[in-house]
Length: 195
Image (cartoon, helix red, strand yellow):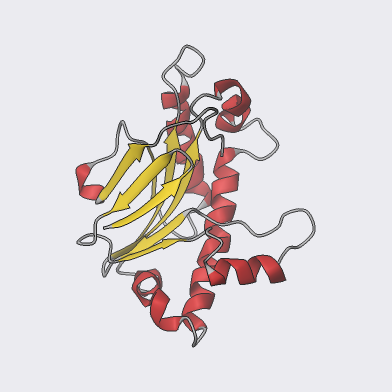
């Protein structure tokens, strides 16, 4: 089992399903840090998803957003009316992360470490999925967010059509056991994550 904390969530990836798991946006990820160092162009910077996971049949890019406790601040992001709509932000992160993963596989010093993730990316018979893990409150302010999550999923699917049609917006309420991912709450210690 591989365990990682992301904000106020703990992600556990089962080894049987996910033998290759990388916390992609982590400071210890040499690939991402090298990209950031060399590609901090003007305003955009380099983006990264939270996790890249793989097995012999598929590769998933997972971006985690925990909007619990901050419904007002994140309403514009959910509705696509903010400065950078959520689905655009996620699509950019996937694009940059994909480039980083492919680059890592081509780098002799990192090649072996990334093989289990890159293999499904370059075989058109294998599956690439993009998952937006979106946690939000069930409150009056967010009652329409379930419908909005479906809109985000459709928009994200269009933006990433060049890579895959397998796009999901999920959370702890609707995750399936066959994902091979267990997600648990961590104590909040005050203000919840707004990432």
